[in-house]
Image 1: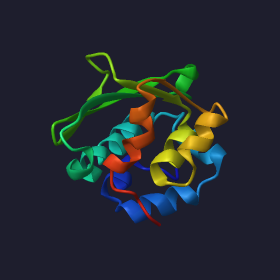
Image 2 (image 1 turned 60 degrees about the horizontal axis):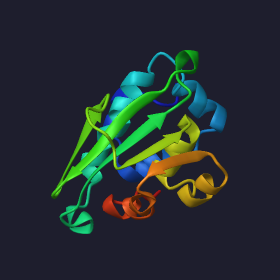
Image 3 (image 1 turned 135 degrees about the vertical axis):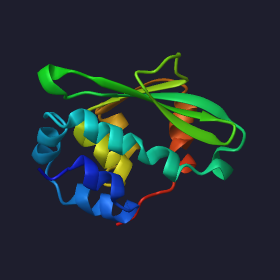
Length: 149
């Protein structure tokens, strides 16, 4: 398995980018569609608060739901990234309505997070579906440290 939940939790941003860039789309689909999906998604979303840049978000508050498709039995998992006045937290199975909702497959999800793909291009090609505050979607990447690899 190319993606391992324990290893993923310890990777530096550049190592995460290298790992994702070294994987084929089929490998990503297999790993995020298999038995370790929940643990992998938990480890990936746990990275958001660590990479949050409160100075870039200012005093804004927002809820962004990520609907990651491609799970076992064609299931979808939903996580919320909650930014509230300088803090960032994650909710598995969100508890409130989002300002922005993104629906994307596992390949697009990892490529977006790793910088291996252009979110704007994926959106224009229909690979990422966004509803709600599209202005928030355009500026969201600035709120988080950009990985490099």
